[in-house]
Amino acid sequence: MNERFFYVTEEEEAERIDKYISSVAEELTRSYIQKLIKEQAVLVNQKPVKASYVVSPGDQILLMVPPPKELSALPEPIPLAILYEDTQVIVVNKPKGMVVHPAAGHTTGTLVNALLYHCQNELSGINGVLRPGIVHRIDMDTTGALVVCKTDEAHAALAVQLKEHTITRCYRAIVHGNIKEECGTIDAPIGRNPKDRKKMAVVARDASSGKHAVTHWKVLAHLKGYTYMECHLETGRTHQIRVHMASIGHPLLGDVVYGPSKCPLSGLTGQTLHAMTLGFLHPADGRYMEFTAPLPEYFKNLLTMLQM
Image (cartoon, rainbow, N blue to C red):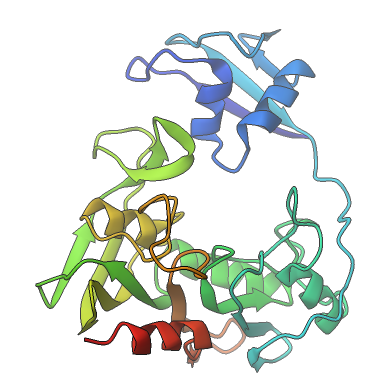
């Protein structure tokens, strides 16, 4: 049982207990939190409460999360585009539409299913049986380079590099509108959207839910009504590029969550975002390694179609 303690401060707003926990334990869904509350796995001041309970300053909250269930996903012979592989790590070029790890509604066809088959269970176990080998992730409709760890030692080493923001991560994106400047930096904290907890948003710097987030960008080409650009992540927050570009009025083409609710191009599913360059220090010998994932065909076709 994983026990976590939270203390409601004077600065935090009064809100329902399930909403409060979802803001401080972002990896848990609201429905799962409500399930834990119903099972009396959430105590406030040592007593069980209902999901409608409104937290107050001074409340001490105990959250008891049971260990993850055994992995139901099975190895599947799904082809992998491998950019590099050795005994410690494997770098893959993830295709569009592939979920990284099993979750509700996606128990088969994930990258983990493919990795379990290819690596024959030789994957790190630090993230538990639900996410073997996964040290970082990219969204389902984002394509590109992703590093997976085969050993716990490699996983721990890369986790430190991620925490210290020393891993190189450069993306290619197509965004709405014509960006006149050649380059720039977006330095704006990201946290849960207070109006929709399923989404992220740029929040006030003094907001308790906000995390430091910096994206460097430069224009690569001007297109018909759009801009082709490179985005370099200094930090790696959830949906960072999508949220940052939307915050300056240039959401990603195809992103119906942070951009127009209907994609203007028929046949395009999800955001046009590609993790092109990934660089890190090899966990075994410390040498710097950098990998480039070629643009997917759909992305190259869009660039050709939208050329001025």
